[in-house]
Length: 459
Image (cartoon, rainbow, N blue to C red):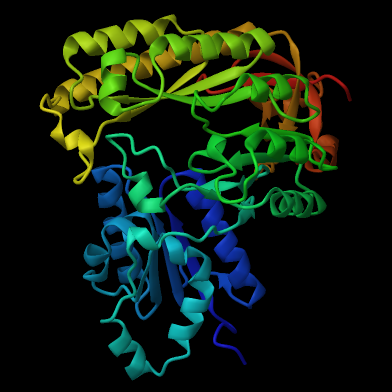
């Protein structure tokens, strides 16, 4: 009998898609060893918290989650990993009930660390709880492979980790270390395994994925070409990629590739050249505009999502208005808005002008409203057209959702699924449509405006 036999685990993840993919990988490893996920109301034997530290709010949510799990699962082995554990290990170690604090370099050894701790006698474990394992940023060298779907249809393939950019507002280089990656051969093998497991779509993830190749002497475009040849994967999406690394070579390949979708997520961070300079970003607004125009020149239907940070130090009212005007003029589909959060130890703390919380909130709201207009306009362009949609696993027997190739969210209900036919005899067919790509005629927006209603046009 192993230390894992008949054990139950609960997983709590905060932050980015990369964290969710990594947690899912750890969960899969524990499942192989006989650990099942605790059901609702059950007390778990193991609690794993994968943390985020992108803002002070994120830190606070991490602390709340840890306290709640310790309270709800008395006696459980509590493991905290991720960026908050890496940046503030002393804070996490001091929390009542935490057994292990594992930094970014140890994420790939979580299962072994749990086994070691659970093999201890109760009195040894109690003593060990006062000797938490912590790491320094300089120790972050390992690359933890991850390709997992969790409960979603899409798989997430981690190809790269860490960042060498050191933007003034950002703690990621300290939390995740320098840029590093897996080999193309290993990543293609993982994509092939996902295909064998039934995957139709893979999202390529990482911290700074365009910087791929630092540790293997390879490059991003060769990775894309290799992945495009993987049988069974019908869709690849590139997650957030720096504008200066989204090269013409990459764009031209995606435009003519077999499986890469017309969908890009490009961080802008500010529409003001002065604020970009204060952030130490590697481009200006003119460069960013040319990049967006180039995407649409090669792929006119592309969905372009853009990250922006509002209320950074140095962002005066005049500079915000300048940024807003630039952002309003860009032909993009969505803005992801993040309020700036003070991160001790970053160079941004040395910038004198500080934006008040009320001004920051008001500016965020303006960008959110602008994003809503952009997304609605993008969706409305495609009402009445037919696009391929990957239908996602659905808990409901009467409604399905999915995304078009160019990332429009689509909602299909049983009465409209087959062009207006409303019959319970269709239910077996509906179940068989999970994780399949079908042509859908897009209609108007749904009630809350988050999707276009559609009906399948090729059945």
